[in-house]
Amino acid sequence: MQQPEFRHLLTLTAHLDAPQMVAHTPVGGRKIVLVTGGTFEGERLSGKVLPGGGDWALTRGDGSLVLDVRLTLEAGNGDLIYMTYRGVRHGPDEVMKRLSAGEVVNPSEYYFRIAPLFETASERYGWLNRIVCVGSGERLKQGPRYTVFEML
Image 1 (tube, rainbow, N blue to C red):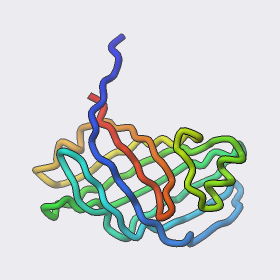
Image 2: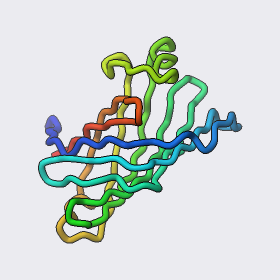
Image 3: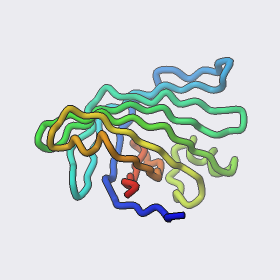
């Protein structure tokens, strides 16, 4: 079996608004949070995260947070890129309580992974439509920061 190889694609930092909704629904604890902006940077693309995206996060019965995120990225040349990702964040109860309280916690203390997909009409960035990526995250005060890798 061939071991997968990875190449850094980008590091993305998102800024979040206060949650629109926090409620316990039949499927778990739902939290809807709008993205107000941010930046992304990599060797092959960089730019800004446009306001208006969001995260439809669900806290499951086992305490895991399941992310369902949709963003619009604007590359430095003005080309638009739609980015979606599902992800999971979990860790020991005491660590997750510290994160919820807004503390900065070393990302080695919890699991935070995403699986992004990209969609664009851009000729320059059309290659994004055809790649598979994974990323690891950390929670900062203003929102998450992800390091995303293309699987080669």
